[in-house]
Amino acid sequence: MTHLSILKEFFGHSSFRGIQQEIIESIASGRDTVGLMPTGGGKSITFQVPALMMEGLCLVISPLIALMKDQVEHLRQKGIRAAAVYTGLTRDEVITALENCIFGNYKFLYVSPERLGSELFRAKLAHMHVSFITVDEAHCISQWGYDFRPSYTRIADIRRLLPETPVLALTATATPEVVEDIQRQLLFRSPNVLKMSFERKNLIYSVERIVSTKEQEVEHLLRSLPGSAIVYTRSRQATRELATWLSSQGITATHYHAALTNLEKNERAKAWQEGRVRVMVATNAFGMGIDKPDVRLVVHTDVPDSPEAYFQEAGRAGRDGLTAHAVLLYDKNSAGILHRRIEDTFPPEEYVAQVYEDACCFLQMAMGDGKGVTREFDLEEFCRRFRHFPVRAYNALGLLSRAGFIEWTDAEENHSRVMMSVGRDSLYGVQLPPLADRVLHHLLRSCTGIFSEYATIHEDEMAHALGVTAMAVTEQLIELSRRHILQFIPRKYIPYLTLTQRRVERDEIVLPPNVYADRKRELTKRVQTMIGYLETDECRSRFFLRYFGEEAQSDCGQCDNCTHAGAVPTLDEAEVRRRILDFIDRHHPSSALQIRLPEIPATLLGKVLHEMFVEEEISLGDSSES
Image 1 (cartoon, rainbow, N blue to C red):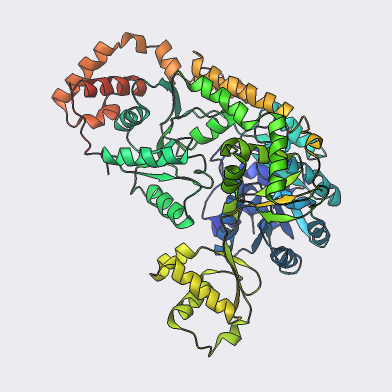
Image 2 (cartoon, one colour; image 1 turned 135 degrees about the horizontal axis):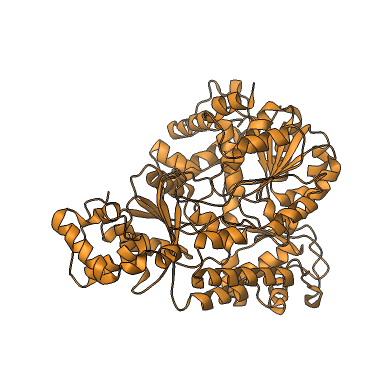
């Protein structure tokens, strides 16, 4: 089979996009390769297609456990054997997954970087036939990257164990300095970078100062710019409040954040993707693996703290190549909030040491004891008992994890899991209560490989499919486990904390520069860059391209700065008002203004429309909303 035939058969595409084929050919020829592809470039295709052509197993290293699970599930649905190993699995589950990869003709093994240092993993890896290594989110290996993770540095050790195995490093956001560091850290045998341009000619960037309320600003943007939209906010509560408010104004909206159940996430994402809901109001938890091509507007109601994060999220608009808008809202407090985020993300080192000491007391670990011990760690209870602010304590634990003192696993990684205890033939003739029988048949239909390995399940989704409550499903799973028909590991919402070394004295907690001082300095630079983006009068597309090491041949001619610098000054607000009123005299409804008055920039049109609406000079129809 050819690469193109595999693309068609398994993924349903008739041709490759951008530099996908170049990357595939490079890694298939055995060359170490960096693939630099902006958001929406189709990174997964670049390693999944060649892996299916090559003999052996593709080892995929990724920090995004939710995305890792999704990709494994999607591959299994296509009949492709894949497994995942990450923090939170039991030792038996890890052994089962790794041995399946040795003996079971698996094509993909997804691994979180934290697992790479495990002696068990390395012992099993020695018996696997690995075709190539894929490093997703490869910027995490560089201390100059915006999301540096020390656990990524273990990848170099894996390369030493597999010296002839090529590596494919993928990232959507990396400066030239980071790209060079990725190759150095991953022990590239020779430089080899394949890069797509970061320029998005169809994406119109703009920055707007909030003159009323965030809710009203978002509303008038949605009134003047039709089509599907994403609105990003910083807090979970804000997603719910803004979505509720937009719905009350006749604009269909839903909200999304990490604390929702999987059923809620899936239902809301599906409603939005299918166009039954126009607006998704979300935290940055939304977007991974979401590929909706016709998003016309992405709004940020809070300023992200890095150009990489903003570029990635804004880039989810206009993937179909048609005109789309990325609008960043700010107010007089935005710069101060960004600087406070630096202090919250990197609290004083003395505070980090105090959190370590308090965590050890919370877990009842004696001095000099605890190496390798894993315990449940309820962050909310910890903060209540020791009087810590959750955000700072959370970030302090993250710093301790990156410095190697602990490993900390978020609660949402620990879903329920089941594996059959008996063979399929043993199930014939087994007498079960009706609901238990339905639950068992649902598992057998929906869980691939359940007889040989643990499968992740979601009781709420099963309950929805069976028309019962989640509690009823759980009760039947317990009953099936009691009868030794299956092994059931219930989900837990409490995270785990592991001491990776013996408990030390508080004054022995020293954070290395690449974990604290260097990273704080890099975050400060990124924050200053974002403040510069707010204040610049330069072409905004050119601003981003320069940051990512690319020189623009010309200004974009369409961002707010370019249009204000060009023909827009001739259209003052009085003239815009005259044109709007003239249009309303000739047409209906006013909600179609952006399509019919293309000579007026969207931001200016939205601003004047909002003022006219507030002054009751016009009323905006909502007939276009669904």
